[in-house]
Length: 126
Image (cartoon, rainbow, N blue to C red; front, side, top):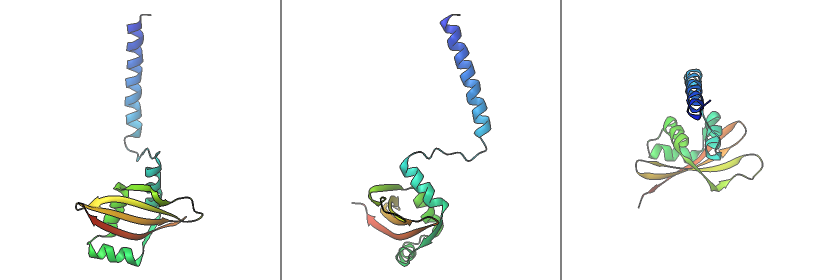
């Protein structure tokens, strides 16, 4: 069999496999949360969230609701250098994002069954 025929058969089978795979996965909520950033955020989002008094004051001052905070967590980046991940029990994560051209840093305490938003701090961009 010539090389060009082998390449043709390979590409034909590969394309049919991609179409079948796209058909089976089209309606499912599949995600590729393999990075530490994505796994941490997914873990926080699936838990019941509570808010500290300081976080509630910040949310009131900046007109944020819990849905917006959830969206900011979902699209944020975890700063592992500031986070406390090597402690037993509840770990504390610093999540950074931007909102209305302001830098936002959230501190979230992630326990087994709940995630508590400890603080939301805004800083103007310079």
